[in-house]
Image 1 (cartoon, rainbow, N blue to C red):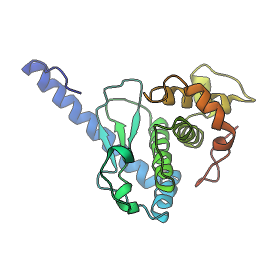
Image 2: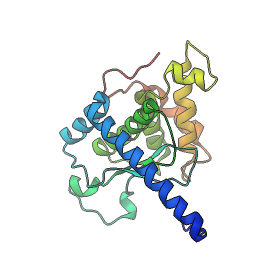
Image 3: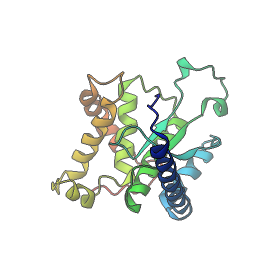
Image 4: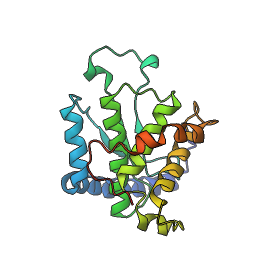
Length: 211
């Protein structure tokens, strides 16, 4: 996306702000990669499957969408000239939004969420144009990451103790799938169709904090 240039004075201020934001994001990322066991488990599991993590696998960048704290980029096979070798096919990138100021736990959950996507893209030939596949990725990521913990749900104003985790996963997965232009009209149906199977799949993590 091409953005409109600001005046010189505003631009200087923005550069300083962006540099500070990037520095904070990079420091948080280093800490998460070093200390978070689930993050380490996911990265180890990806490499154990035979996928080579590309350079700049996880980066801090400014995001245009203010509603997200991170994102996952992966090539669509039919739209890219990639070889049959698994290493050539696997070219994902995780983007952490440096301009979205979030507390440490949410930062960690964001990294885990995107790493679950990276794990799924490694173990299967994912095509996000197929809505059931995208839905399964989002269900697993929202379920495993910790973003649907009871405390986080209470802070969002949701207080269903019995099925709160499942409702949160469905809601967040549906929102993510709906942002996919291939699935915008049937996101809810896609999530419901694969929910039971994908919600039950915690791999490679043994405990996803379900309630």
